[in-house]
Length: 200
Image (cartoon, rainbow, N blue to C red; front, side):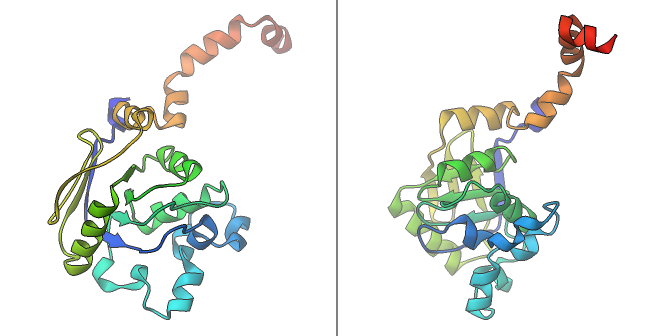
């Protein structure tokens, strides 16, 4: 699974301040009726953006094409819906840096190959300030080294060991794992008497 390995993500960053931002704010519940995730990005933070009347970070020219989203504490809390990371993926984000993440949200991100790493409050505040001051800078999230690098310096990042292993081994992609084991699955199925009898 080496081709699915994710050891680092770098690029521009976008800052969305505030704690306890839940999945219903990330993608409003009325979009749960969508059959696919294809248009989810268009509706990311839709209600917040409407309330901000064009003054939301996702509408700011300086943050366009950002690959890394920097957030506060307990980001992605609320429901278990996977639509939230799916929407942010379709906005263009490839990694998240925050104070903490809701466990299910972080798990759903890992299943999409999107690293969620945490920083101590002092470092997170410094990173947010730095990116807001200079949005043109490149920010790097290194999963392997457990660091976040920016003009604010090199900061130690937290990432659960199990998540880190999945990203580095490429085993985060359950579908790819299943497809790569196709012949083994068929051999196992052929050896099961109840499946063999059903086929006959």
